Length: 378
Image (cartoon, rainbow, N blue to C red):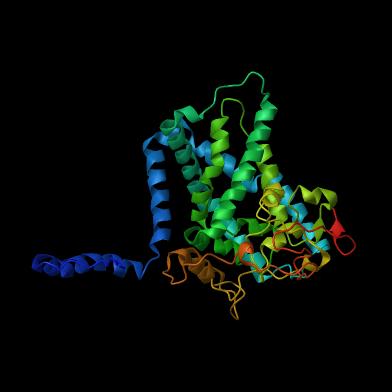
C-alpha cells in the first residue's frame, strides 16, 4: 500500500476574505515608495542620521568636534598630505600608465569631489566617527582592554594599524558582494581616468560601512593611539595605489599595494572583487583574491561596463555639477537588478596554462608574479 500526504489549504472564512483587500491597501504605500526609492540605501542614510543624532545628544562623547574635524582635514589636505599628493601628481606625468591630458575630465571631476569631501563630507565623517566610538564604548564597555605592561606603545599602534587595514579589506569585500553597499561603492569604480585624486571619488554615505574599521582603535585605546602623521602616511599609500602610474614596488609588491596591483581591481573587463587590499596585499593572498600585475595589465582600461552610473566622460560635455548630483542620488534610485557584481568566484575554471590579459595562472584567484621589463620599479 502506498500512502501519500497532501497539504490542503483550509477553506477561507468570510472574515479573512474580507480582510485581504485591507491588507493589500495597507501594503500599497510601501510598494509605491519602493518603486521610487531603493529602500535599503535609504536605510543606510537613516542609520547615519540616527548615529549623528546620538553623538550630538551625548556631546560627541566628551570629544571636541571642532578639534576632531581639524585633525581629519589635516589628514585630507594638510601640508604633508598636499606635499605627498603633489609628488604623486608629478610622478603620474613622468611615468603614466595611460596617457591622459593634464585637464582630463576624470581629473577635473575627482578634483571637484576632493573639494566636496574636504568641505562637506569631512564634518559628516567626523560626526559619524565620534558617534560610533561613543556608542561602542558606552554599549560595550568591556571591549576596551586595559593597558598591557608588556606591550610597548609602538607595538600597540602597529597592531591597530594592521588590524584596521584588515578590516578595511573586509568592508571593501562586503561593498562588492552586498548589493545595498555596492550601490554606494560603484561611484568609486566609475572612474575611467584614474589618478591619485580618485581616492576621493567616494559617496559620502560609504563611510557608514567603514565605521567598523574604528574598532581596533577602541579596543586598544588604553595602550596607544594612531597619530595624525601615521594616518597621513597610510592615506598617502592608499592614494598612490590609485595613481595613474606604471610603477611597481618590485619584490615589496608581494606585501604592499602598488598602483599596478590596484589598477586590476578597477579593471573595466573582469571581476573587480580582486586586489581589495588598501595598503597590504596579504589579505588578498590569504583569501586567494590576489592577482599580481604583469606588463599586460599595467595600462588596462578602468570603469564600469556599460556605464550604469552617469559619468563625466559619457556626454559631449562633462557637465560636472549635473553629473555629481546624479552620482550622489544614484544609490537611492530603485533597481530591478538585485544580483551582486561579477565575482572572481564565478569565473569558470580554465585549463592549466590558459591565460587572459589580467592573469597568468591556471585557476581564478591564484597569485601571479609581477614581471619586469615593461613594468617600472620605484
